[in-house]
Amino acid sequence: MSRAVVFAYHSVGARCLSTLLAHGVEVSLLVTHEDSADENIWFDSVAAIAARHDIPTITPDDANTPEVLERVAAARPDFIFSFYYRKMLGLPLLELAPRGAYNMHGSLLPKYRGRAPVNWAVLHGEHETGATLHEMVAKPDAGRIVAQQRVPILPNDTAFEVFNKVTVAAELALDGVLPALIAGTAPHLPQDLAQGGYFGGRKPEDGRIDWRQPAAVVHNLIRAVAPPYPGAFFEIDGERLIVGRSQHEPGRSARPGGAGLYVDGDRYYADCADGRVLRLLSLIKDGAPLSPSDFRIRFSGQLGDGKHFF
Image (cartoon, rainbow, N blue to C red; front, side):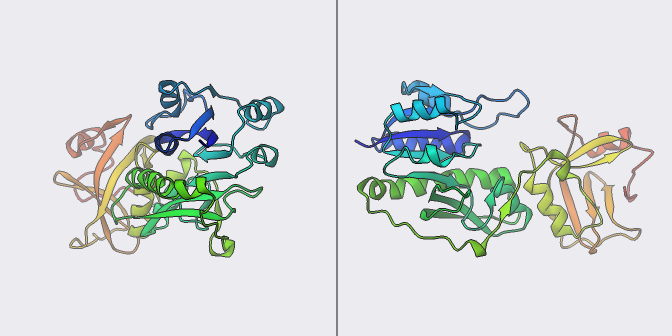
């Protein structure tokens, strides 16, 4: 039986940990994160799975301290796996796994290395993404590829919907290659790093909408950060409104007077700088949906039928 130490968090971590257990891998230690009170915890818990299987679990602030290295060494892993663990693992830690250390990344490497790969792929209007299991080396997301699974990104998919697909893709990729990995016969294909780049994390303020952008750019931003992520937003008189979802309206013409949001009947629309129109399927204020009728009452002085908000 192969033994592994697993560094994991989030839904991908939960599904991949379950996959290891289903294949009979002995997980001798789980390293995960404490949930933050400041974060919207909408994803699955690896700690709960570990508790059900009596797997020893630790939640260090720094995984690369001598104390953690000593704990991992004592667990005698054949493999180390990282499944959406949020911190880099240093070489001294990776070298404790004689049969290799592997990470599951939420993109089709070498594209979208680094942070928030699903959100960046949606923001850039990609038509597909996926999950990649790769060797961990000193440089993040740069090791040889062991397995990949592709998923489509549909034109109106939000990042949350794509992330759910990537979670399944990660499970399929690991499930498919794990027998060969354990047997020592899995392929290890070098990455051509010139075919992709690194991306950083995103902040809530990065979701601010500029209606002067083309409709495709605005639409991609809305779906890239749609709830449960912080959301794309604009402000009226200092009050923040989040656009929950949008879609292109190819049969509707932009109105004179520039780009911006307006109400027509019981629907929200936005004219964009390229003359194309988006239908805004939901607006959210203070965490609750805001209907067009309520919008009229609240913002009657700023935005009425046919009047743009700039």
